[in-house]
Image 1 (cartoon, one colour):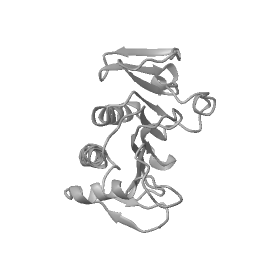
Image 2: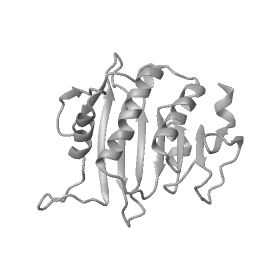
Image 3: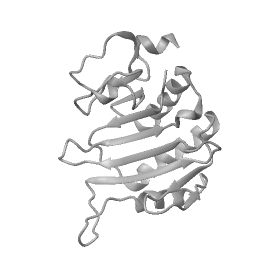
Image 4: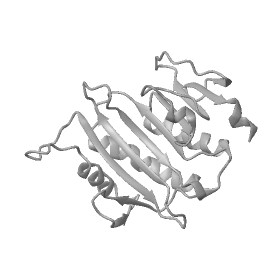
Length: 209
């Protein structure tokens, strides 16, 4: 079993940069204390190789990170509030590449192809094959970000490569909020009703490892 991604996703939700930063601050604080390899978070600008260590006790620093990630117009530089903000951080570890987290928050666009998400990507050499580890991380992400759905998957697997929509798909495990309505059938494995105020679907192949 190869797992390299845990992601949560949700539709339109108008949130301020401060609200997004508060969620992020809770995530990096709790994940640092509960999960190996998820600590010593550093911000990383896409246009620079310079990484700055995030001070989880410095709320204003995390807020500024999100303010810097506000989507802006190509001409004039004015912000585009409906596109929210995007930030990226990496965990400072001995593994290269490091664990990375990408966040898109505050999107409330009429374009339904643009949504909100938090995606954690793991390097293939991390060596964690325990599904329960990733389930615990998914549970934390669900609690802190209140998404519509989330998934544990590998970008190398067929289920990810063959998906035809932006909604829930089942590779290894997928959680769907009880409030989220979708038409896709997620079958072929276990179903756990009531898991984090929703249903957790686990592919049969995932439990054999």
